Length: 236
Image (cartoon, rainbow, N blue to C red; front, side):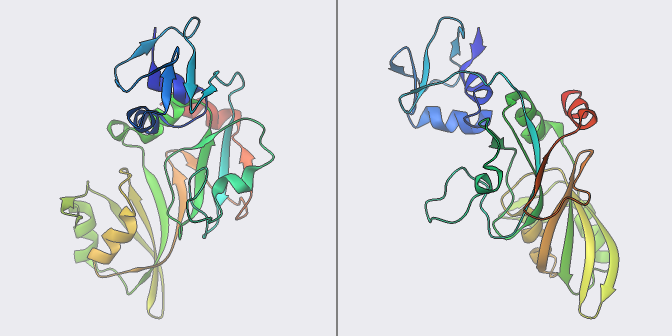
C-alpha cells in the first residue's frame, strides 16, 4: 500500500504537498470516487487513480534536470496571466517533470526539476533544512549589525525566520554584492529579509541548493544532473 499523494508525485503531476492541495480541491479520483482524505492509501497494482479525468501512471524513467531560470518566468506548469513559465524552457524533455520548489518571477538561477517524488519531498520538506545560496545585489552596504540580524533571524510577515547567513563579497558605489544562505522556502523570503534589513534587493540569483551548484550554466539553458549529483540527492 502507498500513500495517494506519494503516488501522484511519482506520476510527475506535482510535489507531495501540491498533490495534497489537488486532492482537497477534488481533482483526484480513485476507482471513480473523489478522494479528499489526505491519509488515503492505495494499491498501485489494483487501484486506478485519475487526475481531472486522466489516468495516472508512474513515470518509469526518472529524470533530474537543472535549469538556469531567467527573470520573467514563473515556476508553474501554466500561468493564469499568460506569462511564460519554466516549462517553456524545457520543451525538449519528453518526461513529465515538476519544479522542485519555486523561484520568484524576478529571480534567476538554479532550479531543479524532476519526476522523482521522493527527491522533491527531500528537498522541499522543512525538516531537512537544505541550504539554498543566493547571490544578491543590494542597495547599500550591510554592516556588522545587519549581518548579526540575519544570523539571529528577521521578522517578516509577522514570523521570525530561521538563522541565515550573509557574506559580503564586494562593494561598488551604492551597491553591494552578497551571498545569502537560507534553508527555509517562504514566499519571497530573501527579498523580504533584505527589505526588512533596509537593504532592498536590486537583483537576485540562486547559485546553489545543498551541494548542487549552478556553475557556468547559461541563463535559460538546462542540463541533466550528473550521476554524482543524483547520488547526493538520493543519499539526503
